[in-house]
Length: 281
Image (cartoon, rainbow, N blue to C red; front, top):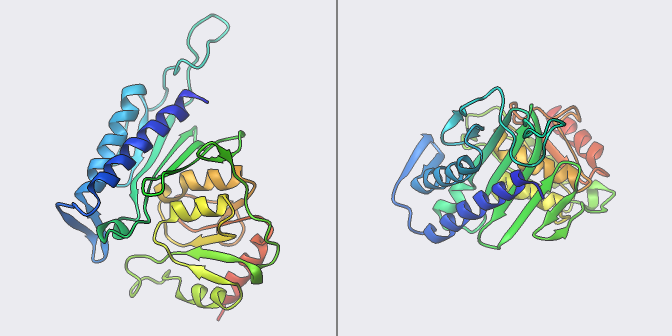
């Protein structure tokens, strides 16, 4: 495995250990908006993750949920990370690398000691996500992928489900914190798709939902108005597990728009059509 992966894994395990040690011991809860929580543990986990990565890659940049954009020492170029040399024997220069971090995906769950949350870390180079790690500290499950090398749960390879029909599928979704006033509140889609499949779960962590699609526990997941740190690692893991990721109309995923559909690929168009039907009513 690459040094980038090993550092991502170490950072995720460190952040996850902190989350597990401090569950039920939150000291402060603030509000980004009326219902969007952030705790002192979110911030502590993010600081630990970033410091772990910076120790190995001090020139890299970050996009993190609590800290926003953090520029590295050299945002345009990063020195080689020791993974090879050029023809002259000099360390290879890596492309511009940015880490996309959610230090606690599932903050509301965490604040209530509901044990469904995780750390999500992705690394992108020149705008392409190349590494993804998602760690659930309560179960000890670490989902991971390196672009082109497949997806794994701990040390076992994973693959999406073989479900071929939406009416036999189990899906997951989520809702924005400001459901009452948000036009993208997802209620119509939730109601319609619930009636055309085995069921729709709402667990409160997009990163773990994506991981569950990757390993076949779920057949699909959709949500609106997420952030890049919610989906960057999970989208790569789904794709490397043989699944498909897109926007809600089956077009290319734009992480900054936050509209995402992930599936086992077989039912992808069926979910796209169901969403279109729900939104036309």
